[in-house]
Length: 96
Image (cartoon, rainbow, N blue to C red):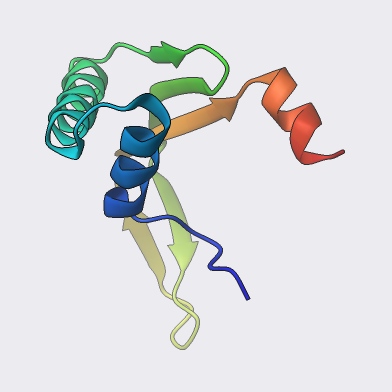
């Protein structure tokens, strides 16, 4: 049975095999791409990757919930997160 995920090392190897670029350089480009996406998201900007989707910074609002055992109200502060919206073409391809 095939794994349901791919590691970074496997991704680098597959890109290197498909392009003929040395894995060392593929790794540098991939790491640079991830660093750029990260810095843009942390700066509050969204990142659109054509044919893949859009990464977007978001905030989850503060809320109050009840502790299951004591039923005491607990306040949870607002938190920052990242959302990802897949492109319509990729979503459609996943459902074929």
